[in-house]
Amino acid sequence: MEIKWHEIDYVMLDMDGTLLDLHFDNFFWLTYLPKHYAKKFPGQEEKARCSLYKQLKDRRGSLEWYCTDFWSKELDIEIISLKKEVSHLIKQRPNIISFLKALNTAKKTRMLVTNAHPKSVELKFSKTQISSLLDCVITSHDYGYPKESQNFWHSFAQDYQFDSKKTLFIDDSISVLRAAREFGIKHILCIDSPDSTLQAKPCKEFPSISHFSEILSVSGGLSNAIHTN
Image 1 (spheres, one colour):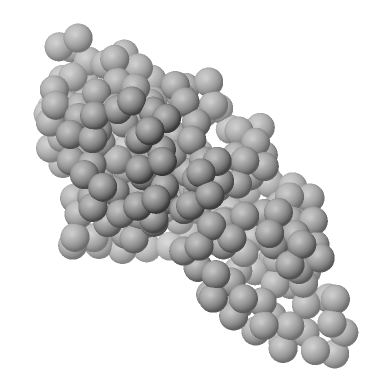
Image 2 (image 1 turned 135 degrees about the vertical axis):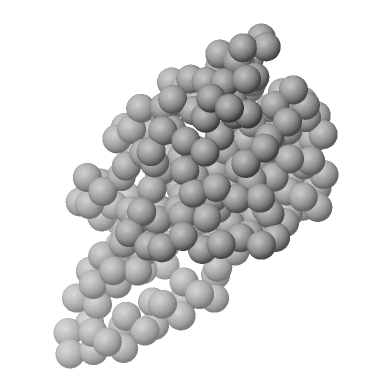
């Protein structure tokens, strides 16, 4: 993995599946929430689960899909409270702290750019060590559009002065990476193993890594950028 660090001033990082293990989110939305929701419909549990899966699928990629307030109202379930019941599953991905510290030493601006609802961000910050190692936190809910939308990128760029040609964007979502590329982000990197319990999915469309150790290597990695600053 070769990244031209001398060309990069800004590093935009997704949260779930990039900085944090996606296993928590996959388990919550695909297993824990459906099980809890089905209890509301005695004798029709399977039908209830299927209905929930369809609702989630129909909203996929929209801002509502990522919105805990929306689903709390839609399902009549306090989503954040339910998430707290399994919050012990919230984990940082390997080498994240070292990577964020290395970026700081190399004088790169570290920007969390996430579709997660602010309440989810707050919960995950309370369970990890990443918040103090970020220079700014941007959630798409502040703009009314998900990262998949060009409306988000143009609104975001009006508030934060960054050079898209000097920006590295790292995410595990192909649709989001495509949107970033369309906007003009020059350096794109895909995380191909966002969930530690699942096998990596090779990414043919963008350069990809499984772990941040791949760009923290002594030879040709981020350490070179550190030594030149």
